[in-house]
Amino acid sequence: MSKYLFIQSSVRGADSASGQLAAHLKKQLGAVSGNEILERDLGSNPLPVLDAALLGTLFTPADALNPAQKTQAALVSTLIEELKAADTVVLSAGMYNFAAPVQLKTWFDYVLQAGRTFHYTATGPEGLVKGKRAILLVATGGVYSEGPAAAADFMVPHLKQLLAFVGITDVSVIRAEGMALGNDAAKAGLEKALAEIETL
Image (cartoon, rainbow, N blue to C red; front, side, top):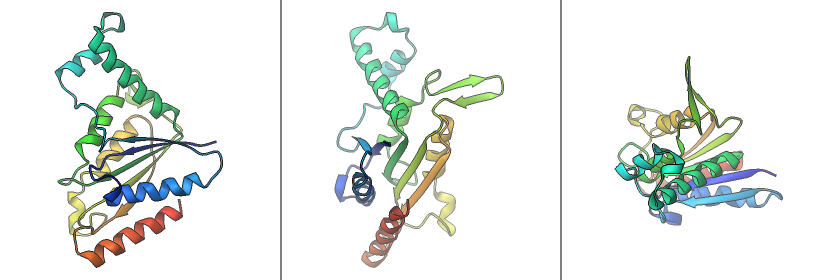
């Protein structure tokens, strides 16, 4: 049995290109007996963004938490356990202003926790979520995988860095590019990405 954790972040849901990529991959995985899929749709059910209250919760000992903090801490623990239980983590996201959506960044703010998903050593930080694979399903208005705009892709390198920080370095990237370059370009970009999913 393989366990997959889907983290979807588009506010457009199934109408988004990244949502279509995620749906296609889920269909592929669902056709294989024994696969288990857990999904968090952060676009329709976003996590509260990191604020002073949540930060206080994260740095308060468990036995000193007030009722509201206990609720926050329980959500953090749930998200971390979902990550740890998965064999493969699938992140689907559209590029917003050259970077990942705030919904996805917020999820990382919850799960990147010292002592739980990484720890500091004498030689630097070490990820504690190892032996897993990640798949990035990315949709962009332009073409950022190559050419002059590649230098402005702050999303894929950032997501890879965040994953590596917790120990996930086996990362596959599927890109639906050119979504804002006209109907023909968008159709070609989406079809290319869907075909690449078939090879995963």
